[in-house]
Image (tube, rainbow over the protein chains, first blue to last red):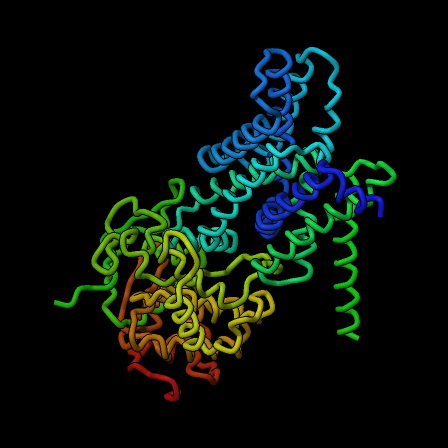
Length: 282
Length: 264
């Protein structure tokens, strides 16, 4: 009740709920494709690599006085660079995907830590990078989130058939004239942009969970991709609001609470399906 | 003069120095149904990939429908040997069929014409009632029918089938062969099969592939031809929906006079 009462009074809570809605849309749509393509570790590598961009932004702001280079901008640049590097290594240089992901995952974090170590002063906001800071979202970040959402939805809407055909059978899509490498690269970039949105809510460590758990829960409940995307977006928003409400009173970390709730929702969905199958079999 | 649908001239192909096909030459006329037979590793699938333009010959030339294979790929329907797919992948039969028209539009959703073509293709393979069923819930034979509908949905002039009955049960195999007989009336079909007996009911030509290749009309095929080029005996001859085990040498040593279903 305190949460609902304060939600009507405090803009920071309203911004947080709005941020949850914006990230849920991109997270549900892209997360569903990530889950059915079984590329969740790819998203994990990109999200951890985001620390390099966050560290760079903090270093440029505090160490060099470049105030316009915000952490969100740094995160977006690092995510896009990570996606482009993964695409180049795996599709152009024919390197093994697990090797490329491990490198991007670890080196991104290493670069981030190096920048943060070189930044003067106490790194008071390191925890917010790692575990999210949804309560600190400001209107400028909301506008950026809305822009990224629009871009992601437009790309998925335009090229949904190509993404679906490649995810189902890339060889057949190639034979039918689809430029598989191009669309794989576009999808990697969309995943990167979605990770940037999720990092604000859940942080680089937990963004992977928020990308995959609502989509996985939706995948348990429906067998068609478009309903799965819509359901995943709804679940993601519900978990974000639920996590915010649960964590607000006892002052728990909201990002962690949101992810714990999403994991609980997934396990409950799997359990319900198991019981239904058992009942149908019996 | 009627141009060949497939024209393969002096083709050699190697994987990492290991020659798989050597001086292969044959032509497939329009409306032919060619059964491609031969031992495992003999080059059958490689030959299909050369016809599709997925592979390029080391020597020689492959022309399909009057052009280079890559240029005419959209006019070819292809059903692969075995589809590796995630059983939890959230698509229904109609979604899979529509993927056969993914190249029709650069962007945006499928149009009404695409959906109508998908419905017609599913009806053609006898799967109209399964359009909305999840692909993963279909039986092996039903999935194979859906993949054939996917190959048919773009209206191909040439249909390439790579062992389409390899992973389905005998009842589904018989149903598929009935379907192939219907499909051959208005297009050229090339089908790789280990079961020569099953395809003799509707093949017009047999292409024996074992590094070299030799194509003959069904009437001219003898056990000697198969033994020499395919490198093995045919132990089972199967005609039509009923299965008949007969002595292969007795059946094939004499020229085959175009027996069809019901002749056995």
